[in-house]
Length: 329
Image (cartoon, rainbow, N blue to C red):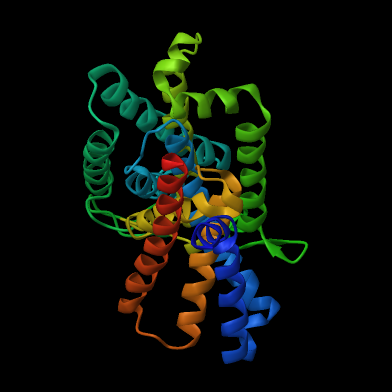
């Protein structure tokens, strides 16, 4: 009975927790189940989910990327500066931050694959380097329309309406970031679960030596995973800038742990037992809905991290207890 209970919790625990949270908060507050509140929840988790998808790809290949928060911050200020400081066209404003994300991914791969630094330590180092770069680039200031410049005068440009629509507009009643999140989740799911490259990614993560003996070019696979992680972090930065209408320094720092928590909570969704795109979305949804409900209850914001940590501990406990019992069996 104990083993069956653990197996049941492993497969359906995250979904049951999500259902319980929705029922509980809907009983506490009638406003919780309103359409406006749920669109706000989806909008709030869209950026975290995009960021978490990048972490998912690195975990699939048995890596880990702690630099996504700093990469998102760098993308945020670069996006804003290209439009506010230099008044560049929209297509360049959208493309150049993604190029920066690719470069961060390549740098991580250089440290991990070529030099041989463990993933956690390498990306921790990158996190500090990139954080220093974006603060140095902005001289510690957030970027906003017609801001005063340290060199004198004011900035020549402003965030255009077309750009702000990406973060604040709606299509068919849903915010644009939500549609983008859905599209990226679908692409990540199809890639990881229904393509040859997705199977190669999982093969590399489960047994790197066996993958090498099977002819898989492991270095290229890891390069691809970290580049994808950098791209997703940059997209999250672009969405954040369009959402708040300015380039906030350290924008990604508070979202890093939420993204990591979403990925690990997603391990146990429907018994996947591995990083996966749909699980990452459910993990982000659990955390987002929980935080929204706690906000409605006027719980002090400084207690939110306790709740997030408790949810993560429960998810990891069920996942690893189940994995240990399965290995023993």
